[in-house]
Length: 72
Image (cartoon, rainbow, N blue to C red):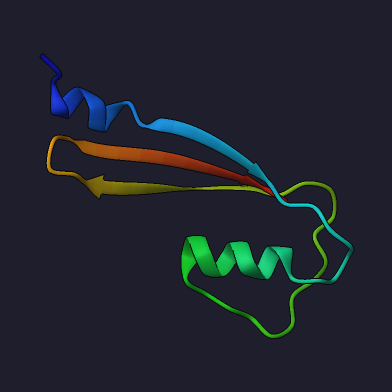
């Protein structure tokens, strides 16, 4: 038998890497998705940026928690 509180404490982890040309909006998309913010003028990301977001889903049979790690 599964313990739903244990499942919620140990989320499934997914890593997503965004690639593309400089200045196309990768950082803006990630900031909007993870923090719900948008800035018109943002400096180009130098090197690599990392952020994550926890997503929780409630299903009929169990609760699901996903940890989405985003690399820009």
